Image (cartoon, helix red, strand yellow):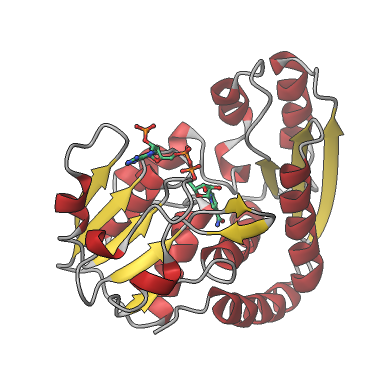
Length: 280
Ligand SMILES: NC(=O)c1ccc[n+]([C@@H]2O[C@H](COP(=O)([O-])OP(=O)(O)OC[C@H]3O[C@@H](n4cnc5c(N)ncnc54)[C@H](OP(=O)(O)O)[C@@H]3O)[C@@H](O)[C@H]2O)c1
């Protein structure tokens, strides 16, 4: 079975558009981009386009690549104070001279629609999330939409980044899977991955997961977005692994669109919560 993230995402965005319209709220997403990395610019454009699709207003702040940590933080703080802004997304990675942790911690937790602020990660790891990081959240939605119930299953996540691996493991654990996190120092990686009922690859290496690493009948989630000869390619050797897996996400058209749908859902959630607390 192909887990069609594009189809599920489109259906969820259509539903969200109706909810936004019915709410009478005017959610707004502000993006902050530092420098002119073409991939980051493309991701930000896609996010703005999705906002337009669901009736969420968007504004883009572009800062020069030589901006200091303090300059980026000042900009974020202006958006924190702006009553019209429901959600703030700082596009990562930031240039190496900018302190990413300090910038991420500047975003008000209630506007942190990326879910990377320590307060939101803490809530996630304590089993009581509000804003979960968009990629893992989107993966959980995709599993749910296809009737994959993680409870009691063995889940293995390859990768331990704040953006994907760690929050993915936390969400699967919250859903009562038995979770193992693997990374570059893991010894005998295939001995772990072969046990997985749900295998999530967030490595950043093209076709890293081969059939010998996959248990027959596993659900395989490919987070990777690698450029190979000008084409987008996942972390999983899709053509060969699909022969063994019971379900698998394609790249493109799997996890990527679900990430964007989650961002839209988080932004609307932020607007709703702010309207309840009278912050807007
Ligand atoms: N589709 C989407 O919406 C979306 C969203 C976010 C990211 N992505 C993509 O997903 C991939 C991962 O993203 P990320 O931000 O998590 O990347 P990252 O921060 O570079 O993390 C990669 C992880 O893979 C681990 N790793 C590297 N080589 C390994 C090996 N040989 N064996 C086992 N583990 C290994 C690293 O281990 P160490 O920690 O030990 O270094 C690290 O934890 C990238 O291709 C990225 O572009 C896609």
